Length: 610
Ligand code: ADP
Image (cartoon, rainbow, N blue to C red; front, side, top):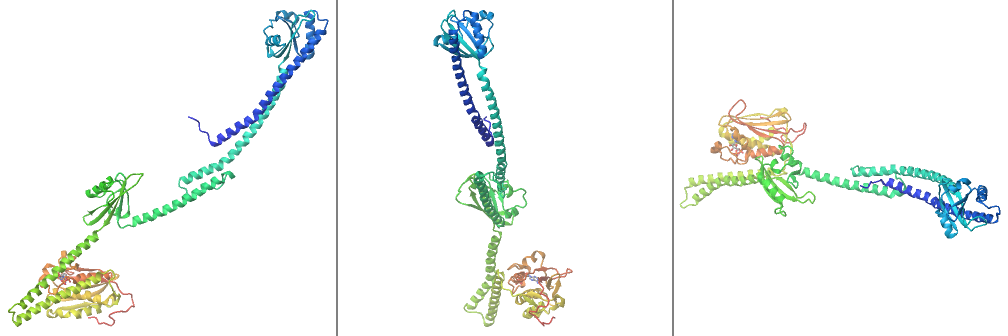
């Protein structure tokens, strides 16, 4: 594997290599040329010396023997600081300025010396090599000489030590190399320090980029290592700004969507590609509050409904993908949900699905109420209508009934008609009370006054029964916030029932007392009472206790429903207690009202209490 060097190291190495090249190449070329020039110079000098020696030899008459020649060569050699050798044509050394005369015969033949061979062919021979005789490197220059006097033809050779040329050049080289090392070290150190100085801000830039990528979107590059890095710094900072802006927008949108998601009244369940629950909203969590760790489970593990699981599987498989799937399920035995499922395309994670649970329990209940209502109204109207129809037909028959019978038939028809009129009036009033913005003019009302008004309108019904009326409206109970007419209606409905179901001679007790923060009113009778199982239901529309049906003339089954609506609209509660306190026969209807603020006057000023 190729080692990976940092950009900085590569830059430094490249710079240093170039620097070394720049420092070494020119001197190398210079020394090469210098050496060549000095060699050439020494060669031509040696040739000049040889010419001089030849001239001297030609004129020297004293050279008659090898000894004479040896002496002359020694003298000339020592004067010029060179080694002079005379080699006969066969290669035999005749004289040598640096070898004693008696050793000369033992010298090996020089016939094969390169400079000797070369001089034989081209008069002058030249070679640089190691001398075994003197054991040092020498420059040899040889010249072919004809026979002169007693001197045989041969080759005169001059040898000068190579060190004469090499040493000054080598000294120069050493100085140069020392200079190069010095310059290189200085330049390398300075460049290293410069690069190191660059390193810190670059490192800071890298760290900032890392921080931004690790979601620290507030981080910015503060210092720029150099002018040339400014565009990069600006680019990174601008990029961070833009990322931060986008992330903020995305986060805002995400939070908005999450808020909408959680505020939805519908339960939402998101399935991943494996059909496991990936996300749910708050409503769905409440819906499945009994199950721990909903996320990651299959729908069936959370809501045990096979139809739901099937529809989820179907959607995940992509069957009929264009159409949203829906089904109705009942949870906990009382809540009905309409579930709509759509598939969720996700290129990366694969197909998912979203299920929306819409609670339609109230809708179902209202549907049932409407159905029951229509059935009840039809049923309630059919009895009087049938009666009216029967009597009318009889009256119209031929021969018709006698006058007295006809009179009583007409009475029955009138009674049934009145009953139907009352029922329609009650229904209309219920409809008005059920309207979302049912008009109520809440004012401080004296409950005693409302009772008095109600009693006056239904007192005649009690006439034959000789009922004893007991009222208790203590001063400290105070007034209540109410719509006067509606409060009168509540008292009248309760009084009518109490009168209707009370046996003759019994007492009716009406009271309004202070009870914690409310005013508690009650209407108590000593009638047959109402058994427990009916006590809740008697406040429903048309609900009547079967046992009382025998004597229910004028009863519509709507009176208590109207009372409940009125009291609810007033922010109070209504309920029945039966038997009465102390296990006394009969029933007491209670209702609460809000007390009027102290000092405020409205209906019922100056009304006498009974
Ligand atoms: P109704 O017009 O039939 O009186 P209500 O809604 O006022 O209709 O009463 C519903 C039913 O509650 C009555 O039919 C009766 O069976 C029962 N009920 C109401 N008040 C009394 C009472 N004071 N004593 C016994 N039963 C009562």
